[in-house]
Length: 333
Image (cartoon, rainbow, N blue to C red; front, side):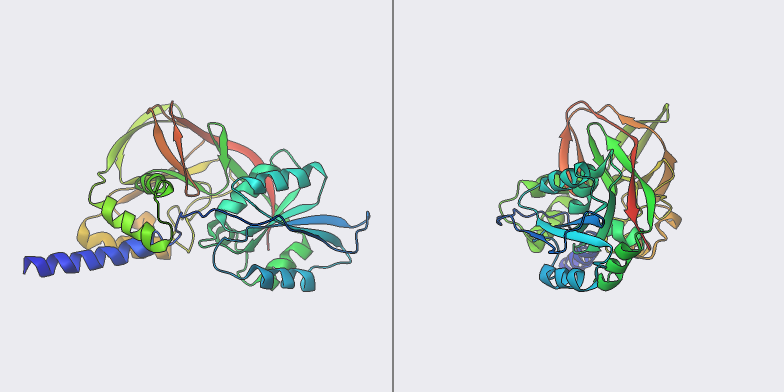
């Protein structure tokens, strides 16, 4: 009977984990020759747009999306070019170059990781950022109500309506969506060293590490006040979700000059499913295992703290300081 219960428990937990981390922070290496396409109607009077494509993000056919761009982008208003990323951080270089050339917009065709890199390259510029879904989670796109339909996304670019959003600085790094410490950062760091990649390898790692990982107390200085919280994970949220409508910070406001600190405690076994459902339907703030608050400055003096930034693990040797950074203009409905 005990074995049956343990098997049921394992199956149930597997279900929970696979859904909870469906925004999979897995990254792959890119081995692709650079390919730059420029429209044949280059005109100094038209606005210039650079589309940056991550060829391995998500599962969508990028060629199909690019055909949509070619067909539906208003060529009376815009000249455009298409660039492909070749390696990690290449999108930063490509977007920064476009900003220096005074392009009107840079459009990310990829996931949240690509989008975060594009945003970094546009800091301190007047170049606007556009988004076309092509990732696994697309958390920021969902938060900003960018349609999944690429034709509708291109029409948003045509309309060229924008809003200002915050970027968040964590030491010398910056992000526009979500960073965090605790279990998700632990998994991101472990997975970055794994020999095997892919969804199942990622899921197996989670199942293996969950029983070993214990919630930890984190000493934080929040807007000058010392606070200690024991947590399974803590997210520093500019946007509301990881992706796939898993909303870890449903009350986050992306342009209010603050960020949300979302703390998730370890739910009991029989409360995991209800916690999952709350994350999926945007009511996690009603759970007894959750608390959140807004702030403008947060410090953690812990040595060698592991933080994930949109799934990318980084070890900060001398602790972290998080605060709102520079604004970015984003094309929105």
